[in-house]
Each structure stands twice: as structure tokens, then as C-alpha cells.
Length: 120
Image 1 (cartoon, helix red, strand yellow):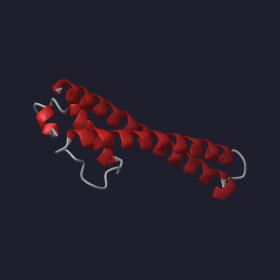
Image 2 (cartoon, helix red, strand yellow):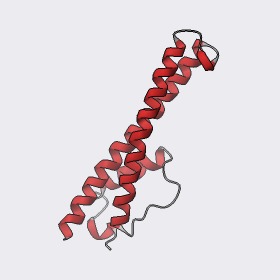
Image 3 (spheres, one colour):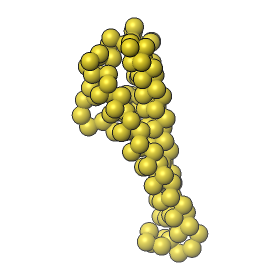
Image 4 (cartoon, one colour):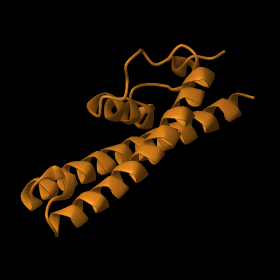
């Protein structure tokens, strides 16, 4: 089982990997250490995270639409149209953040997979 340090020459070479890790941290998607010592497990973890992030982006996108709709009438469950608009913007931000996580992790996963394939 190779570690990521067996696959990358230096920090510049691992730019996609580090960008994904920074994005995961920035959006608070990492609650436990990533398995940098096991590149195969890391690749699998990235696949899971990308799937969840994609689903999350869709969910929050739909929530944003619902909240926007409520803002055009009486505010719905949010009470006022103004609050519904703020909640719509919040949901849009959450959707965009999840999409950023998905894109960054997919890029790192593809790069990692290519490097793993190159070892075989």
C-alpha cells in the first residue's frame, strides 16, 4: 500500500491533492485525519466525499429554490419574505460550497488514481 508521499515528488507536484485537502478543511468536511499513509484508502475516501458533496449540492440547490419561492409570497415557514430571501442566499452558499468540495475532491481523486495506475 503506497502512501501519497510515494506517489508525489514534492508539494508542487501534489498541488491538486493539497487543494482538495484545503477545500475539505475550509468547508469543514474533514472530521478525522485523511489516510495520507494509504493512497488507495484516500482515493476511496475521496470517492465517498465527492458523492456526498454532489448530493449535498443538489439538496441545497433545491432548498434555495424553495426558499426563493417563499420570499416571493408571504415568507412561508420563514415568517417573512425578507428572512426567506436571506435563507435562500444561505442555501445557495451551502450548495456552492458543496459543489466546490465535489470539484476539488474529484480532481484530486482522478490525479491520485492516475498515479496509482502508473505504479502498476
